Length: 348
Image 1 (tube, rainbow, N blue to C red):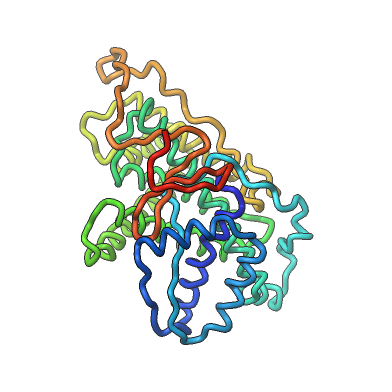
Image 2: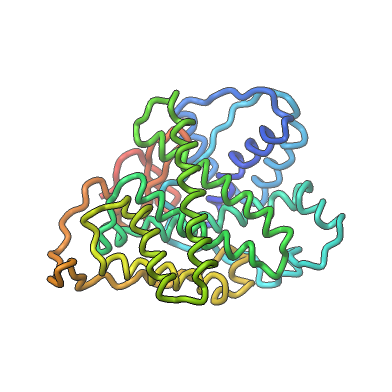
């Protein structure tokens, strides 16, 4: 997960989207690729509280003015978790004992908007960090391609989505955070689509296709856990089919041993997110995902040991604490999470 200042960098994008959705903004001036990356780098070093307050104040003051937005969309989150902001949910204004005015405050006030934007960013970055672990594409032998990578991210966002739906601490705020979580996912998906080198005129079409696939993926998980909750064996078989369809992209050469281990991971994380993560940790955006499955000594469908994996084309394994991020234009650059240094050149 990124340090807390990474969330501030994303506040600009989320604030802009809220203005556009509410209909109060009439026009947007596009920024250049270089300008977008430059603003992202500058935002990363700013103070969270000051940035969040300023950005959310602009949501009221800008009205219909034209403005230039430069924002950051990370394709690979930093490995270090953010510092815990608080361990007292009541002090943080989180709880289910709210009346209509408390709910309106959560939705429309500056502090309420800031709180759900920051929490949505933290939750998304935890899912992104787990989904981008290089071991998925090395030991687990998942293809390093757009659709399998997006399916892994969708899987982890779905876990968070189910926890938010089942939340017993602040159900109203949980629904607002859920909206933010999926909006952040779509913005990140759009940046990753641009990074694939598609023509700009087709980006929205590809984004729509990715959204439809994402909703189908999530719906199939819902069906598996609801329809077969009393039949563990059938549930496992159903999850294996879902993983084969979306994560492995219907690969006819997929291994049953591989599918069983991935299905076991899905079942474990579902229970972990719903029952194993303490409320305090969840509402601070600190998710203990645990370790990845053990993919050592996997067998092929004939019962023979699989050979060692070689180098994965396209996969960049960077030295700690460097991470690869994307501008909204899909242009990659590299960020040192300890020193806040950034560079266009791959660190060695």
